[in-house]
Length: 186
Length: 74
Image (tube, rainbow over all chains, first blue to last red; front, top):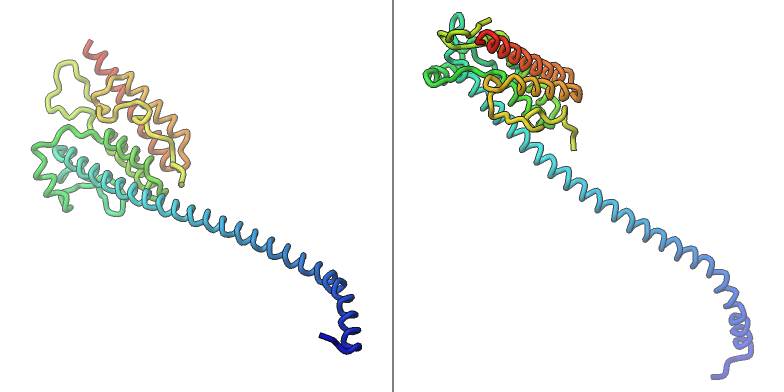
């Protein structure tokens, strides 16, 4: 195709300009490419971080579930210890009943159980109860407190240990009705 | 994971908790009392410290009582 002379000349000028235009834009393209590569790397890094966070969250959830089970087990063991203790001390006469344990809100303190709901259970088991061993129960509860992750529960359980030790100190050292020869009661 | 409030109790360090304190020997009671004192040294809560020392004192008192009984029986 034949072009008019003026058009041919214009194309010639443009073709001469093209390398300079490309050269002028190449810096921008390079910069944009670098920027995109950097952003891509940043997105990959953030994605990895998010993945790690998700893994951490999953681990936290698993640990929370374990703690929940631990607290549940501690509660069950605590209640079992309370039940054992009320059974154990059932035959020990007090002024107007038997020594039991106030378990409401974990604020443990010795009390007279005859006015409490536990009295029926105590009465039912009194004939089978053995010598009280509050110290053994206190030791068992200290174990539970150690295993309990929640500070408030551990603190309350240890307060219960203190109460049990106090109660053990208040009890006579030997519950035999007629101690054998050579036994010393204090 | 949260930290424990004090280190493992005595029975986790080799003592059988299934044996009631009243049925343990004087040496076992003394040893256990010492373990509770060591545990108390690791306690981060005042109440845990108090409770563990109380347990240790009680075990020592039981050992003292057992020794007096033994002497009286001899």
